[in-house]
Length: 368
Ligand code: FNR
Image (cartoon, rainbow, N blue to C red; front, side, top):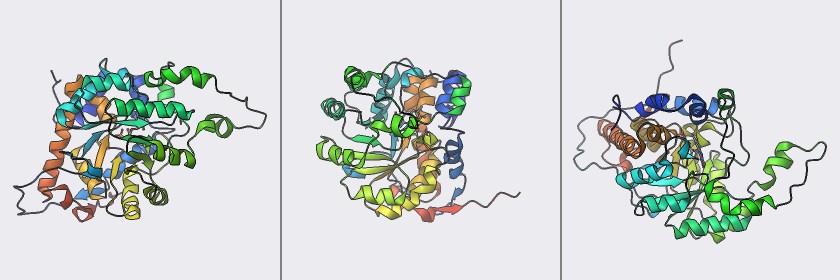
């Protein structure tokens, strides 16, 4: 049963406030630091408007797309969100079922509440990818990749934009405490990691540089991963066109333009504001996913117009999961897809290939 009042995908964000206790909601909706980049992600969409077009023949319209050899009926993916068990007892299992019902790729976080094998078993036919955080020891990373490939995950999304965790002031002030237990996917490696030497910080050493960043990914780790991975590798967290250009030449399947939902560098630009420059830097062919602030089908349209091949949905997935479990996530995706189709129809676009920067106009500055 879906609660009343759900007419738009964004309604899930509003209704979730009734289903998620404040400390957890602060953790979910908040960003790093003062929430500046999380807020910027949402505001960026308001600076663009969609121009309606008339008398187009749209009877052959559809939303199919084929980024990186995939064949997707719509350009929506479910982003990696850690520990979905905090929002619903069925956790990532419910998301897998919703993904299977709507032909949506589920990107499972390294930090999921259930193991990657448990999620795969919940919906064996669903298309799914695995989001990877490089582990302190390469043998652990290697084992995670082996397990993901064996369980039917078809690609790896390597997240590079959070080598060190930025606390959310909103979550801290609301009293949110992250679960202390290691993520279930990482349990087999906990003992080996604990045995790693941890040299104590000396006087004058930094908790960030010599502390948290000790195991941060380096360029040679990416070379190693690309040579060793049994699965195609996407890189998540790209904003600067120079990073995009450099990564594009290294044999990646594609890039994810993302500021981690504003949860890493507070003050980083909105993902949407970086998209067109990244597309210009890598050229028209390289598949680009986008995430950050998608709350409706018109947002999806704007991201596609500015250069994304498809988009990923983060918080809205957790909102829908908290409100109505698998049914909620599937319904949210259905609403999002229909909103995209409606926007395409009224903008005169029959296919995703018809969507481009020419469909948008800059919103006039508000009158002071
Ligand atoms: C995330 N995100 C994330 N990204 C990732 O690569 N690995 C992870 O484990 C997580 N975990 C996570 C937890 C929570 C609570 C949130 C809100 C986000 C980032 C996520 O994949 C995505 O980049 C953003 O959520 C996109 O922005 P929206 O759609 O939430 O606005």
